[in-house]
Length: 219
Picture: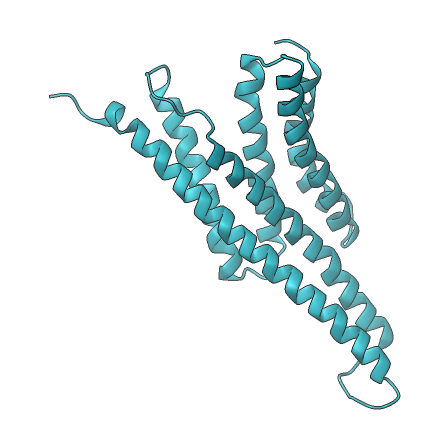
């Protein structure tokens, strides 16, 4: 293995993946949400930088090409596990997360089986868009967790009971505005997760089609 800066960034992203889950073991919410969001965003930025620097500095290595998609998958899988585990288990969240996890396991097994056969299962441009949409949706859902706890803490502190009186009308309008932000943030994150899930299934099917000749039984 060559210890280049792109490879070091990739290894750091791989090691940061379980750190997202660790945040929820050692910190209370919303601090855990904040730290997980920041760690995830930093790791996502390194995903772009390591590939860019490797190309610009001509430091592309087989080790980096192998480890980069593994680091991406580890980050996405662990982050989705944490989000689903701490969510209200809405099927609109669980289903796309299930599709993404299923595809990642299936394609990893397919790549292992195909091995050295002459089948091109390298990362495609659409697969890169898939990874980008996954990371964007996960970042939005972590941000939604932060905003949600802020809104709940704010409403609890003010003692809002839902009565619309002239005395607390300004506070009610502030709460309504915060809830609107929370609603749109949550739904935008869900929409992006569904887009990521659809792209995930499409790229998975493309890889499967390429591997069909190897999977066919000989006469």
